[in-house]
Amino acid sequence: MQENRNLYLLISLIALSLITAFVLIWNSSDSADIDKSLFKIAADNKVDKIQFESAKGKVELTFNGSKWLVNNQHEADAQMVTVFFASLLQSEPKRELTGAFRDSIQQRMKQTGIQVKLWEGDAIVKEMTVVGNEPKTETYFQLPGEQPYFVTIPGYRVYVASIFELTANEWRDKRIFNFNWQNFKSLKSHLPADSAQDFTVTLANGLFGIEEVAVTDTTKLSQYLESIFNLRADRFLTSEEIQQEDSLLSGKPIMVLTIQDIAKHQLRLSVMGNSKKSSGLIATINQEAIILQPRRFEPLFRKRSYFVLK
Figure 1 (cartoon, rainbow, N blue to C red):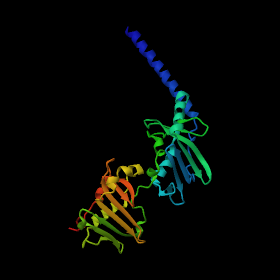
Figure 2: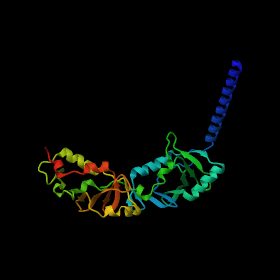
Figure 3: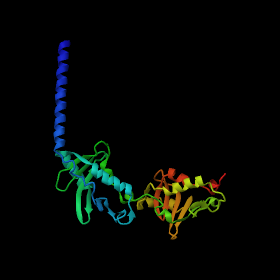
Figure 4: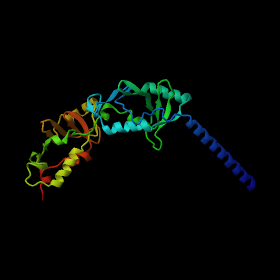
């Protein structure tokens, strides 16, 4: 009995080994037939316009010679643009879709797919449709008139379609005080509930100081200004979200920061309070509504007495 059992285990092991080898060879052969550069663009590309269009609308990124713009209105997040090009350079087709699953994905592409076009000057250098699955775990690319492919970035388990699904607001540069700091003139911090603690930061002879403080703790002031320089919004609110937060936005702010440059241009950040719809704070920057994370706001909520050297 034991000999028969051992023989059965040996036969089973050999059978499994043969099946495994067959699958590996078949997959290797299938993968070898796929052009890995099918959806790539040249690393030294000169793309100056990108368009994403779906049932939800259209987003255009254009390069004006010095920076990328979103819909020719707002500066784009340069890091996100870099991520987009890196995704295209690294994405590879894993397998061509077939049968009923292919038909299902093609139908999904017609309904929710994103038409992507890249231009170099007046010429379209890449055009394709991108769509993800419902759980947002897999991504599929399709060239015009071709079959769809399951696409991955080798070595990473990422949802490739996420960068293609960004809205216009999500493409925007999230820096709050986005201007040339060499032209800085003054910063005024106003606390409506405790205006006696208001203060003004000015630049004189290359040094920052606080007008209302005789001897300023320069270390604390440097840390404070560093937080101001690096302040970023979590996201910009849509018109629908603004309507939902209307009662808060029309209320009294808990803090107002006003920065002025030497040309007397002003950037004003008003922090209103906790959002009803998210874990962040509602704020406005020159009348645009944003969500600001509390951890980014806390270093800015300082009183004049905080900067007095002790």
